Amino acid sequence: MFVAIATKEYTGSAITLADADITTSYNSNPLVFGTDYTILGYQANTEAGNASVTFEGAGNFSGQVTKTFVITREPLTANMFTIADTTYTGSAITLTANDITGKDAQQQTLTLGTDFDIQSYANNVNAGTATAVITGKGDYSGTVPVNFTIKKAALTAGMFTINDKAYTGNPVQLIGSDITASFNSTPLVFGTDYTL
Image (cartoon, rainbow, N blue to C red):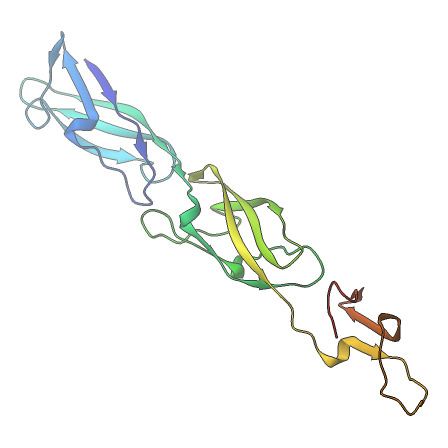
C-alpha cells in the first residue's frame, strides 16, 4: 500500500487531515477514504515538526498503518505586529514585550522570546521612524522588518542652566555660550536640539 500525505502548516490547533491531503493506492489502484480505510487517530499533530497519523483498514482491508507527515512553521508577516510609540531618550531604543503586540493569522497571541525574537534595530536613536527586525522561533518562521515611531522628547526647565549676566541698562541678549543644557546626561546643542 502506498500512502503520501501533504505537508500542513501550523495553525495553533490540532491538525486533522482531509481526504484531499492523502494519496493512497493498492496495486496502483486508488483507495477511497471511508470505504477502504479510516483514520484511527493522530499523534503530535499540533506543534510544528513531525506528526503521525494511524490509518485502519475498512472493507476489503484490515490492520493498521501509521505514517508521519510534516507540520511546517507558520511564516511571520510584518502586519502581525504592532509596536507602541516610544520617546527619544538620547540612547538607542530597545523594545520589551510590553512594547510589542503580536497576533498570528489565527489571531493567537505571539510572545517575545517564545514565538519571536528581535534580531536587530535600525535608526533607533533619534526621533522619527525606527525599525525592529523580528525573526520567528518555535512554531513560527521568517524574518520581517517592523517600523515604529520614536517621538520627540519634551523640553523642561530643569534641562537648562543659564549664566548670570551683568546689568547694562539694556535688554539682555543670550547667546549659546550663556546656556548649558543637557538631557539624560547628554549635552544639548544650541541650534540643533533647541533654539531661543
